[in-house]
Image 1 (tube, rainbow, N blue to C red):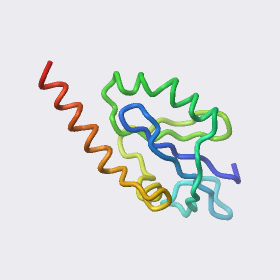
Image 2: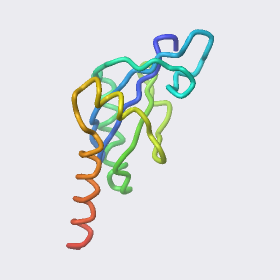
Image 3: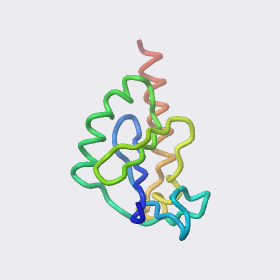
Length: 115
């Protein structure tokens, strides 16, 4: 775990970005609010497989903004209430994930009103 864990943000069931979170010295947790250090990182083939496996289910359940945690090759957590990491991904990747999230919310509302 000293290499950290990876937070992957999924928007509407698709991976939108990731950040590696490295624990502070003497700390087992890598959460940024306890001193974890964010690092720019991409997604591996295995992480894309994980996203492909769970993304459609998350979308069917109406979960538009989700953060998953991966350590090594394993999914360790699914965060649906307040996933963090978008500020760091925005900074590292030059994106605006919050705009993508709102676009997905508006699309979902539009689809719902047409049904």
